[in-house]
Image: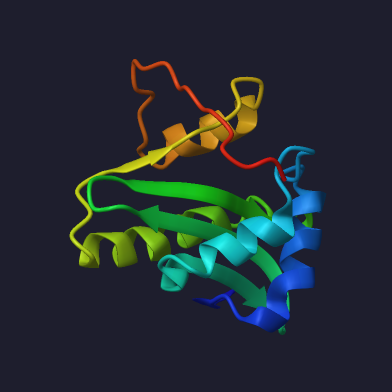
Length: 138
């Protein structure tokens, strides 16, 4: 798998990947999520390809205090090959180079396999309650 920065021509393939992976939810418009990401640190939006096919993605963020991970996805046909870990390492390297001291991420509590994945690659569950509030309805 080759990892590179997202390109505009990847949009349909990335959204299809997110759909396959169950990441698209009614309250988040994936087209708008991509458009918003491309305005802030687009270099932290990575895709993994094999034979020019998008098989993985990760969207990193950094606001000067903490880094964030969103839309980590690996095509189900390519899972259990270390690609998720490689995507996380690639975005982690970029965040660290920006001076980011810590990465946060959120996982739906019902997604046990993803929780196990993050634990296996060294992430720990924080004793926090996550809050959110929509500012814009998609």
